Image 1 (cartoon, rainbow, N blue to C red):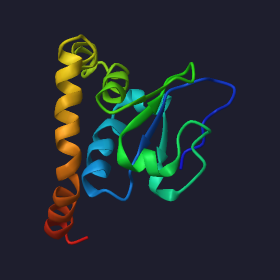
Image 2 (image 1 turned 135 degrees about the vertical axis):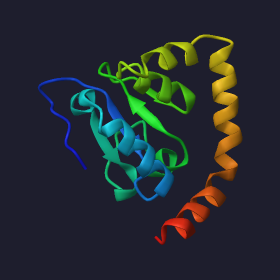
Image 3 (image 1 turned 45 degrees about the vertical axis):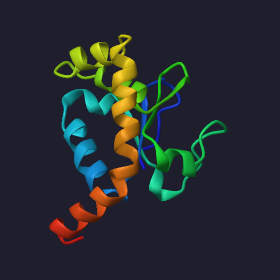
Image 4 (image 1 turned 90 degrees about the vertical axis):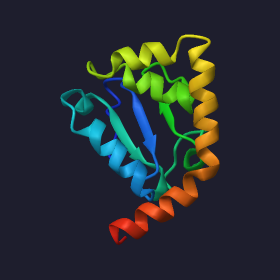
Length: 128
């Protein structure tokens, strides 16, 4: 887990490091130059995530905490994170705009039930 710097408020990204798909996706973002300005927390490590986020909730949905301490989950969390990266910023703003924000959240909710099956497939293909 990368520790957050208490002197400088920054966005914290909570991700499931036990999920092969999640690790691959997060690795894409972490390779971007702006990623150094974010705190990356692997929630599968079972660490204390704060009073308003427990490990079970963090494992069930993607979360980010903005520099002001507000917690976002699901599509709204992706939207917040994407806005931090110049090549993705347009998607962050587009996905926050109603009614597209509702469509992004709906698609995310449709993805969640099939995520375990997809994880098993990725593990099988990658030999994990």
